[in-house]
Length: 496
Ligand code: SF4
Image (cartoon, rainbow, N blue to C red; front, side, top):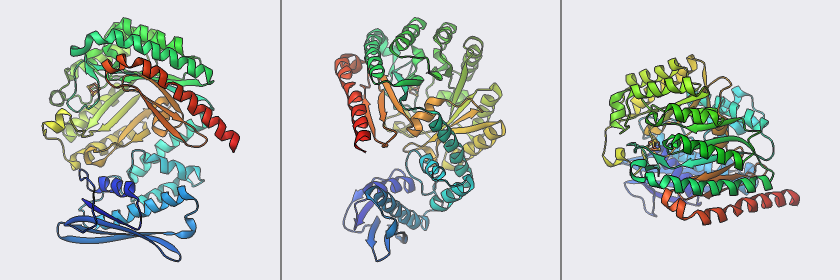
């Protein structure tokens, strides 16, 4: 769609709303109206700043507006945030006159819709008033507003518990047994890259040692640890033991509240690996069926059956003894609301402590998008998620973190559900950006968070095993950026 911005340069706001309202359409900037265009103007009068969107699409026209009182535009940050909001709302209001239905998340854009709810609650609004505000300002439906209320409660609780210097640790293992059809992750299938595992682990141990030194020097305190990927349980039991030993040697684990490992693919789980994880002090693993329909599993290229998942889950309960998360995905090829409901009911009956319900994200370059595979439509995905919300709540689970991604089927969301008191700290900390995450390994990204100023910086590790191994010297040198970040944060405090 062509975008014409007049009297402002809030491109990001316009593009985010375009993505929400007309997924898949790319923005093109122009100064002339065409048969698919949105002209968004912003003007300031004596009392108000007013955004007006004139939308022209498939021969139809519509307009929408939103205004902000000038007296509220105090300071650059606030001014930009309120004017961006007005730009988005005017675009939304115009589009609602032409579109057959409103987006799943109303006028809310971005990957962390919970941050606005959390801010409202922290500003002193009651929960009831915050929910009403979210419905009024962003046209949210009651179910999604209440998902946000629960996840914001979990976030505020963790924020209150965290102390200065608390951090999370992440380790990325970029190997998987085979590649799933919906995956755009950089993981290497071990069939092709088995020989890279030992040198990858050598390099990773060096990075962990380096990071351990920096963390000690800065007085930081790990409180949550997560080994993800890829599929870390692609490693052998001996390699897992070696990795956990290296982690424990590098970092002080005495304040770690949870230690999670992705054992996502049931076809990688063995009794010996579960023993290695338990003996290494891991408290939570993920065993992810995605679906318990064999037809769906075949359609997404998983090399295991639903029965393989059941066996892996049973084995994990017997040998591992800690908490188990299971992931499901709504909207997979060959899935239906009925077969999705059956998968969900099975996870509830198994008693998984955490159940994460993702919505399929249509990523470029995956077998699904490349092959033009038929997937369930928006109404079917909506029905799957309705079932998830109702049945999980009915079984005593609560949503504790939530995020959205680009190009999610139907524009929906990913939600982590938990039994009471079993919420995973790492997921809340990373999603809500409540503390620094120090990360090592393939595709890992360190996120430095200055909680006092809200400043965030990222350091990216190499993605592919080969480049990670070859680039380890640069990766080690990059760690100095962590020291610099904390020095600057300290100086900012002294300057205040
Ligand atoms: S297990 Fe996960 S990371 Fe590995 S190929 Fe499948 S979706 Fe991608």
